[in-house]
Amino acid sequence: MELHANGTQADFRVKEVLRRYVDEDRVVIVWRSFIDPVEFSGAPLRGAEFREKGYIVIRRPRGMAENYALLQTCYLIHPETPVHSLTDDGAITGALTDFVLSGTAANIAAGHQMIENILFNEAMKTVVSFELRRRRKHLHFFVNIF
Image (cartoon, rainbow, N blue to C red; front, side, top):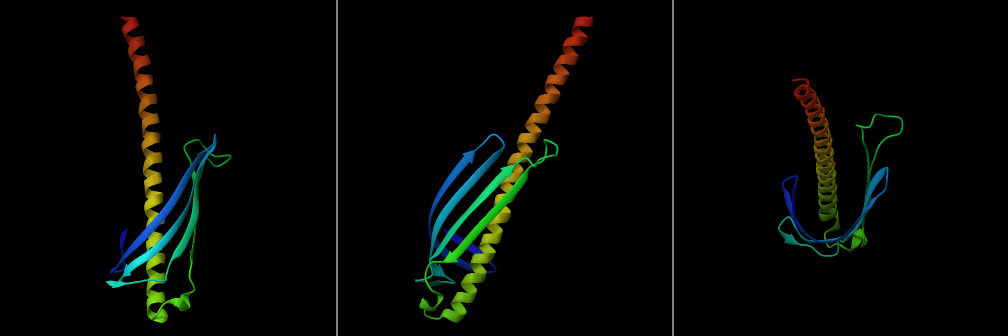
């Protein structure tokens, strides 16, 4: 996977497992990832693996209208190997940490936008379907009068 953030490029090898649980009142997506940076800022990189785990919960908040959804997100990322194992640990570690944080923030924002778009599209389908049924009933009533 190739990522760009803050004018920097990095190539990562990523292994990820996702699972989705659907309950009556919520949807939960959980994942675990192993992230292995292969190249960072044009130079090969070894010894800076990361583990990531997280979840997203989408549910209706209690006591609110049906057209609201609550979105909870949790990302936990930690280095798998000690920072001191990197050769030039000061410069590379700081830059890589900033890069990972920026990339994660962008992923969270993109994920939230995607979920928001899906929820919006579903809400619009419901509204359009309701309006079509209402108009059909009105038209049927109108035709029966004449």
